[in-house]
Image 1 (cartoon, one colour):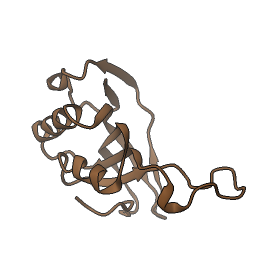
Image 2 (tube, helix red, strand yellow):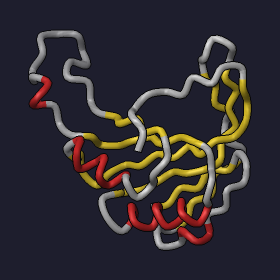
Image 3 (tube, rainbow, N blue to C red):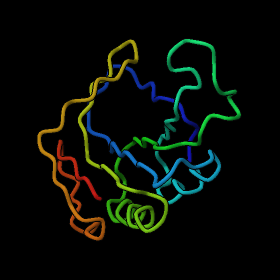
Image 4 (cartoon, rainbow, N blue to C red):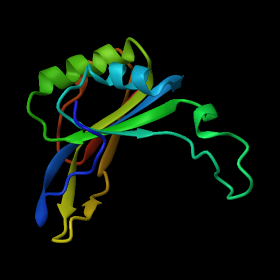
Length: 143
């Protein structure tokens, strides 16, 4: 799994997997990364609550902030069957639900990425991972 950094290919456009995983409960970072090993080869961004969301006196130290509630994975689609197998593994384990699709992007010469909106959403039961197709601009929600 790659480090949690954004891609920097500048001046490109195309389609990448855009995958959001929401865990059943906030996980410690190591456990969240271990769960995401089911989907290797993607850039991983772990989402966690801000320790001081209101800008007032912090009520929690960084060590006390709850774990990782969700994550985003992005990258090129190389093997659809491997992604489906990884989705099934996540949904059989720590994931509450997963949103996945092949999403269009435009990366400026300065390196900023703009993601195109989804054209359609398809909601499936979590056991129907085999019905996920990687059609451009269609997001599948498995819950």
